[in-house]
Amino acid sequence: MKRKKRKDDVYALGQYISMSAHKARRVIDQIRGRSYEETLMILELMPYRACYPIFKLIYSAASNTSHKKGFNKADLIIFKAEVNKGTNMKKLKPQARGRNYQIKRPTCNITIVLKDINYYGNIEE
Image (cartoon, rainbow, N blue to C red; front, top):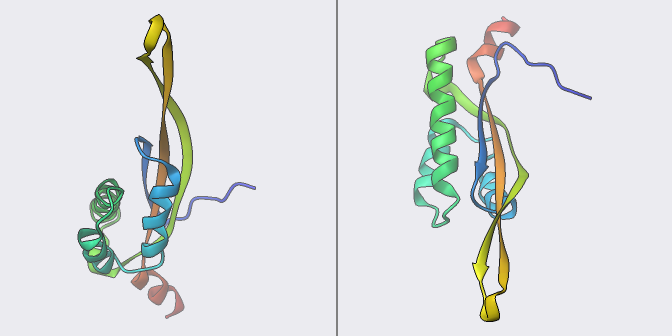
């Protein structure tokens, strides 16, 4: 069942990022449901290599919200963050006796959805 796009959702999608989905998921699980500013602080201080592409995606999604919807960046939360396995990049490495060895580099696709907290407050009033 496909979820419909809402008016207050803003997406950022990173495809074919060269790291395994398991390593990226370890970072995504730490930031899901947090505010935008708190997420940026966490990602700057975490020692993992996966933090930089996720940081860029969240920053891009926040820029999309402020440009397209006019939301304030301080009121944003990470509503949905998911990591899916992408395709494997395949390379050939030469081996002994003229043979080759296949190297498989995993990739992942990361989806970030941001929502504005104040949007719900206006609906309830």
